[in-house]
Amino acid sequence: MSNHNLKPIDKSDLEKIAARVREGFGRYKAMIMVCTGTGCVAAKGFDIRDKMTSEIEKHGLQNEYLVVSTGCNGFCAAGPLAVLQPSGVFYQKLKAKDVEEIVEKHLQGGQVVTRLLYTDPVTEKTHEKMEDIPFFTKQQLVALRNKGLIDPENIEHYIARGGYTALRKVLSDNDPEKAIDEVLASGLRGRGGGGFPTGLKWRSGRKAAKERGEPIYVVCNADEGDPGAFMDRSIVETDPHSVLEGMLIGAFAVGSHEGFVYIRKEYPLALVRLERALEQARTMGLLGKNILGMGFDFDIEVHRGAGAFVCGESSALMASMAGKPGEPRAKYVHNVEYGYRDKPTILNNVETWANVPVIFEKGSKWFASIGTGDVSKGPWNGNSGTKVFSLVGRVNHTGLVEVPMGMTLREIIFDIGGGIPDGRSFKAVQTGGPSGGCLPESCLDLKVDFDSLTEAGSMMGSGGMIVMDDRSCIVDVARYFINFLTDESCGKCTPCREGLFALNRTLTKICDGQGTPDDLAFLEELSQTVAAASLCQLGASAPNPVLSALRYFKAEFEAHINDKRCPAGVCKPLIQYGITDACTGCVVCAKRCPTQAITGEKKAKHAISSEKCIKCGVCLEVCKFDAVEVK
Image: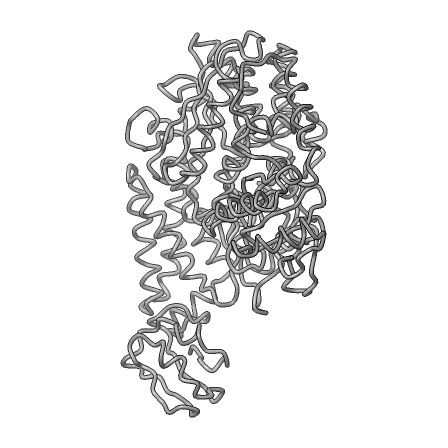
């Protein structure tokens, strides 16, 4: 299945390649799909893949089983993992020593290795096949349609799954306006956070280029920098050709011949796979001159971002690409008219581009039938398609999920995410990245779409979803995100630069037990000022964590201010550690305490010295008898 002998192809070759690759797959009893997304790689996923390959060769099974290195499978909590296809047997939390047992017992002996299967932490039921695991059953894959099924570094795997046939269809129709109409009819809105109708953006850019007689550029924003977010990175690592094909279709629709992917420097694996995909696409004539022999010219270059969060903002990204400081400009200047090098520019994020080929493959009506709203009433009236979320935090099943627009927070967190670990209670979920809001339990039945989240005081953002339990302090969480945004503000406009600094200082004062009742009114007034007066959307949305926290969790602020108490036991100046009568005198906490603040005889109740205690929480973590309390 090597792709080292690639050569230029024309439009008639796609089916031939797909048939040849599928025939090659059919010669094997099974394919062992080993996850090598960043999460699994960090847990030695490459070692699992290499060990699987060497063990199969050692037992002479290389003609019966094929090891495929895939991108992110999505179920990060279960990694490193491997899935046998087509049976779907799902092995999780693998170590290199487990591989030999899989090869000998399962591949040779036909016996599934039960101890390596997934067991649901809530129901305690063991599932053999991936399709039966609750994490996967409610998902609907569109942008992630090829996850865990292809080698992202082999273009022929993508073609075997129908890749580049949508591009061929669009080029065969040879009608850019028809292509734009199809995207408009689908109701696809930008997945980068703004939710702007994609077809409307394309039409505006095409019109501006024609009226001005200027070239138009197509750009993919892969500068995902939200804490806890890894959707775009994973798509590039897992299925880079879906993004390239989407960009090619968009380029033809708007009349562009030059495109760029702006990807941050911190994504080394995604960058390697993206550059390999570009190289393979050029070799096969899917990028460059006369693509597929159909007279269309288009190529893509890579721009590497330096990791500035503000460069995710469209005009700041354009400035950065041009070698200027990554600072935004006034919003009345539109990128579709004056973007990169002051030329018309179409900018969409990774997930948006990955959705485009499917719209042409399955039709705009099919795409519009997924989700909520009625696109026929206008491009702003629908929330069609699916959305990819990175589900992280205090939830059993962390990972990458893709669900239809309109699914509730409760379904995502409890049905797919498996609920809160250790029997703790749900407290809040923060959606939309650092500029999103914290939503309480009363919002769990809220439908997740662009408009509903905004009305609730949060936002869709690019798709980060951080779950918190009763051990999370909302005041501290708001401070964390404001502190992040203070550091990431470019400083160009005074409301954002000075306003975020003042918000951060006030929240810190409250967390330190020095807050006053007047601080609450000050936080609200200042947040509204920053939102209204800031130059770009970083500043305009930055107060969301504060405003949503005050809206839903005001009592927690009041406890910090009036009672000098942190109900969650997080803010160090407002808490004290103590030991209850449940202590058995096992001395584990005393041995682990870094300041020797814990004293007591073996098998007798211990005590904590408040003078020596630095409130690091180590004793709370290591105590197996719940004898450490936070007051």
